[in-house]
Length: 145
Ligand code: DHK
Image (cartoon, rainbow, N blue to C red; front, top):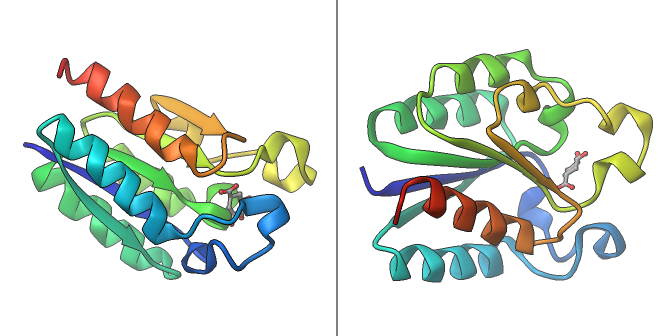
């Protein structure tokens, strides 16, 4: 298995336009390109996906069970609400990293709790779009590449 799933939740399709003072100016496509380059240099492929629908994210996690060596997920607002996403990630048996672009702990208290963290092997928050690259580098290290 040489594919890393990088999953993005609701509203992240607007990255670069949406509240740039919080989420930065980079677009999701910029992040996809940066992660793709790192993956390629390490003999991995990236399946980079975004959906505003919870069920779609769950279906992709189920798909990842069959062919992914790891999942990097920014569940966005579902981080704080979704037991269903937590349960889906619980069916995945390889490393999971949770990424938040902003430092959720510096923000409203409802953003301080994450269901997904109960499953994540690592959590990166507040490192901007670079958080995805950091998570991917950590996954590559864990895979021994
Ligand atoms: C993105 C969102 O859309 C919010 O709902 C989360 C996360 C934080 C982020 O920082 O990437 O609370």
